[in-house]
Length: 111
Length: 123
Image (tube, rainbow over the protein chains, first blue to last red):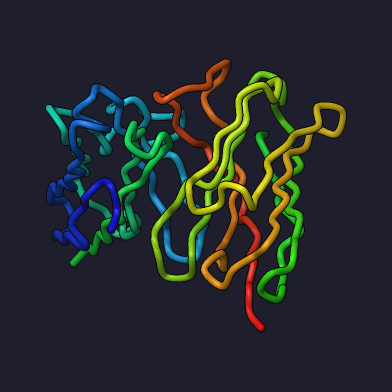
């Protein structure tokens, strides 16, 4: 059971917009800690996708955006492309475990 | 180009030890906190341990506290993870990751590079 809760899967047709939620609590996101997102393509290492809620590292397309509200974060992918098929993980800090925590991951399928 | 090359994985029996190394290049090692993140086969990501730039601040996940030790060597531009009393549930891919520049704290994120190394704990 992950500290941060994500839907197991989301899907969309090419060109559509999909969103992935990351629900936390008062000991992590709700305490004011930022949400960060990672993309893991099949068979590869995870890659930092967004940091500090909505900041893209160099090379990440602007189709990826994020937001945070209350105890939840959200990742949006607009103009979905086949190469976006991957697992996506959110991450924050939790005061209850005094450590960094991840969500369980969401598999994005492009129909 | 930023590179993090992890080595030292393999098959080990429960209760034994293993030491992972992460050799870095392409950036100033001393400017970054470093972390270990792992992923059991078919499962999600888990933060394992982290160390700040001068080794004065160190943190561990509860699942490894007392068994794993993280360290770094600036002269070698390397990060290490000494894993003792290994358990079957420690079986995972282990990734090395750098934190944000000049930072250590709850707002940190991870920048993992490279393929990681597989540690298999089995009798």
